[in-house]
Image (cartoon, rainbow, N blue to C red):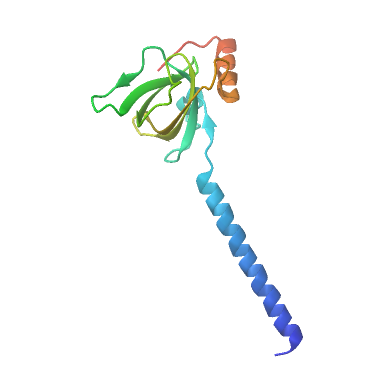
Length: 148
């Protein structure tokens, strides 16, 4: 084999390896990509089925219910237009409370209940995710009423 053919084979092999590495990185990135949706978007079917995503809004007043095991909590997230029931098993953040902003990550079940794997609460009295604030503002402008 000539030196030129050897170089060509090495370059081709390098390109194949680089392509494989890029494909693996993009695959890992796609699997870890988590989108944010409002309760209204979830109700409209815009959220991905069978895939993890985030819902943000306000914790509905009077919706927090704790199970006897002490770890399972159910509550509702609202954007003042729609309400999504959420169940979570784990320890809630100290700042998590009714009427305050929260973002939950998990999956939506066939029954419409969101099963959260992570709950994020506000960090001060002025905090609300930008997307959640926008959704609440849009719901107020549209004059929507809260519906389940």
